Length: 114
Length: 115
Image (cartoon, rainbow over all chains, first blue to last red; front, side):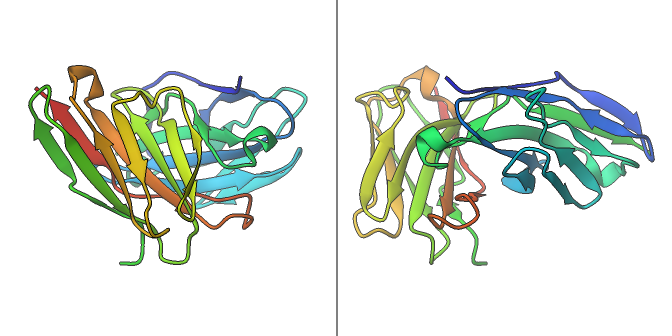
């Protein structure tokens, strides 16, 4: 079956530090890959996505590249802000489910201090 | 606000009681999904509808759980004879089938606490 593995948190950084949150996946076929973010007290929001190998998703300074050879989709940001403090979820959907259902990782909490 | 809405936001109930949650999707979206999220875990898929048809159910959805989407718009999720293990955040999402590989938009969730 499908699965997503994320690095455990919390990840604690100072403002302006470089961020990497690792994500690897197991899936049949050719999945689409997503990063969702959950700010305190709010619902999940789509941060970025990539639908095929070597695609790079980007949004709000965050980037992730779909690496089929390493089955990875690591999230990066060059300079984090306090407002980026949230829980980040890596997820996939695949052809087997008609790209309908999402399989999520456990989430990684990011804490950014001033 | 034209996003996904859920009601109630919080529900506290005693073990053995029945509860019902409601989800209103984005109005033009024809797919609606239910997920469950427990503390420290990512959301887990429960079921989804396309219009009024329930197309897939996870094995997580025991016989005590039932979901409906009678007119292809809002949906309800009912849990009968609640157990303490049902305590979780119940998330609803919606999407437009075929568009952007079914990009899903999530509501704020209903937090259920079973005492």
